[in-house]
Image 1: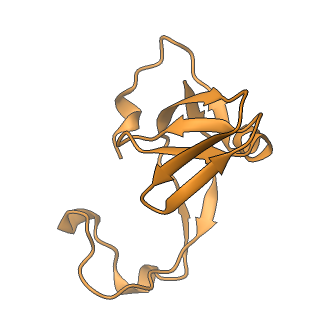
Image 2: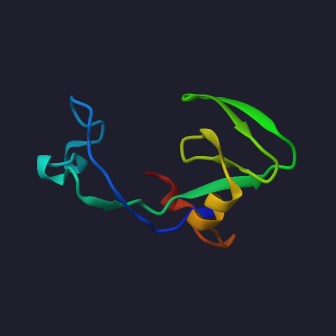
Length: 103
């Protein structure tokens, strides 16, 4: 298992309509253009040894040898290049609780 490292991102909400989260987590209008930090999330990942193709909600993804196949918090699967994976994920001790994985 691996945990996403803390990182700060710049985000701006572009789509109109209601926020999909509960009202207490809904963004305020003045949040646009501010920095946000991702919640710590634990995912399962395996480094692949053969090229693979995967159908995702975003379309067909191709994983190359050395890429990581990640299973996200809702069971979704996606590839991540090794260099990016190592910069953004860290190993999780087996005894660490998985309670953080619900986002």
